[in-house]
Length: 288
Image (cartoon, rainbow, N blue to C red; front, side, top):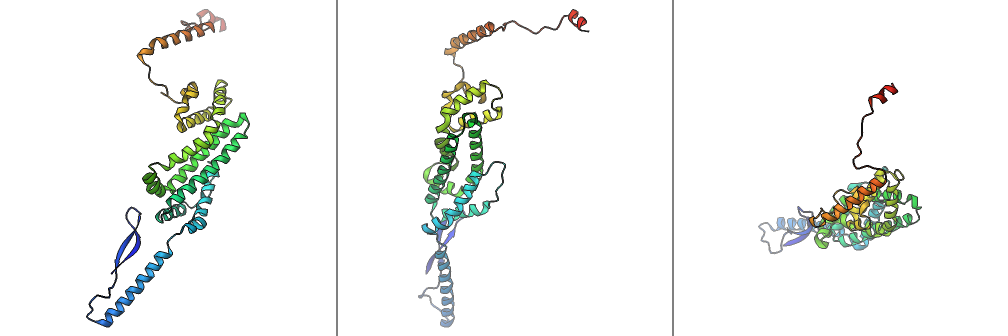
C-alpha cells in the first residue's frame, strides 16, 4: 500500500510523494514477525502523517500568526533611515515567506504585502503634501531614497513569492510592482509641483544641492520616462542622450537655433571672435 506524504522537491515546491507500507495482502513467512513489523510501520506512518497534517498552515493561522510577524518586519524596513540599522532576522523573514508560499498562501501574501506598502506610501504622500514648498525637493528625495533602500531588503526576502507566484502567474516582477506603487501613490501626486520647483532651483545655483537635484530628476525619469516632455530641458541636463538623434530633415531648424543663440550672446556683450590675449610687455613691466 502507498501513502502520500508531503515533501519538497529540488525546486522547493511542495508536493506529495508515495511511501510504501505493509499491505494486508502481503504474504509472511513468519506471521508473528510480519504482524509486529506491520504494526510498527503503521504506527510510524500514522505518526508521520499526523505531523504532516499538524504542519499544514490554515488561512486563519496565516492571518493571525505569520502575517503579523511579516508586517512588523516590513514596517521596520520601510521606516528606518538609510543610515540607521535595525536588528531584523532576514533569515526568519525568508523562512516565513517560504512557508507561506509552500502552503499555497502566495496570493494572500502578495495582496497583504501590496496593501501594507500602499498604505505606507499614502502616508508618505500626505506628509509631502504638508511639506513647505522650499523643503519639498529635499523631502521627496529623502522619501525616494528611503523607499529604494527598503526595497533592497524586501525584494530578496520575498524571492520565493516572486518566483513562484508573481513571475509565474502574474507575469510580472515584484520590484517593478513596488516601484509602480511609489510612482502611482507618491510621485504622480507631486510631480506637478516638483518640476516647477526643480526648474527654478536649477536657475538659482546652490539653492538646492546638485546631488539632490540629480537624484530627484533621475529618480523621476526612472519611475516614469514619459514625464520628460513636461520639462525636457531639465531632464536633459541630468540624463545624457535623452533627446532623439538629430535628423537630416531638421538641419535647417538646428542652424536657425544656432544663429539665434549667437545673436543673443552678441547682444549680451559676447563677441564671436573674442580670444584671450596675454598681457602686453609694458603692462608687465609697469606692474613690476
